[in-house]
Image 1: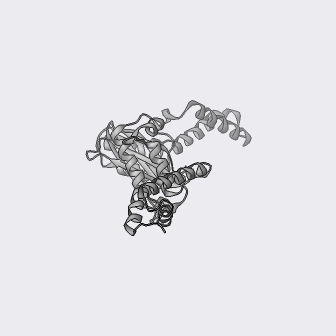
Image 2: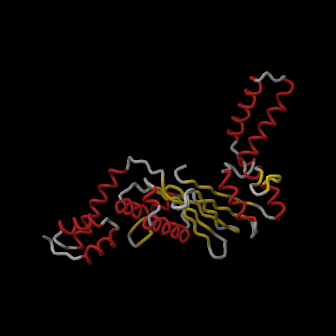
Image 3: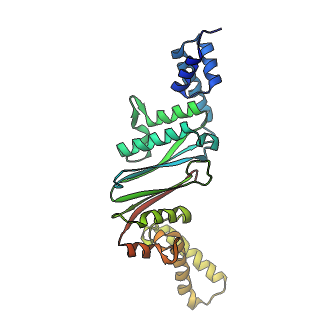
Length: 277
């Protein structure tokens, strides 16, 4: 029997994040050598990473990090396979470390983030792969947002009390305002696709117009009334799909645009991330 102690098992677990039985087995196979056991577990874990590539990662967490002066903020989604892993401290620590790295380095896009060095000699992609190996599930990092050009705040929503936030919203106003959090909560609840009418792609507008025309004709409406009815339906689409056109969640007699106007602020941009969607 290999010569190792409970302290060796504890040390190996801290170094690798592997389960107790896996650590014991690795120490057995490595004649009690912690260093060899670490190497064995990493090899085993990396083999598992390849096997898990085809699996679906639809659970996970959204984490945020806002600067103390609210001039910048980060939103990161990290996905895994099960809610059991998602609510674990190790998984959430990985997500938070990535968010801190984004805040410190401001990567241009997800490819730049994954290629950047989060620890000495270790890229973010390698860091995620290591979490994959240690946690025994497919771990995916493919979305983040970062704002740093105004007053930034975040709202994080838990869909279940025992899970980490599954919906995160990052908003950026041109200046500080008490309405920021309420707007972020509204975005979390109503999931607008665009900020304003001007942000809706032309092809989307044309598609909606075409559907409105065909629907109106199918209803047998008079040809002369067609343009007005189509425009009315198109405006209804804008009201539903754009944040500024939606009735405000906390006062549905006013639009979000009216709430911002009354507060004397401009909403520059927003990001809404829901895990797996």
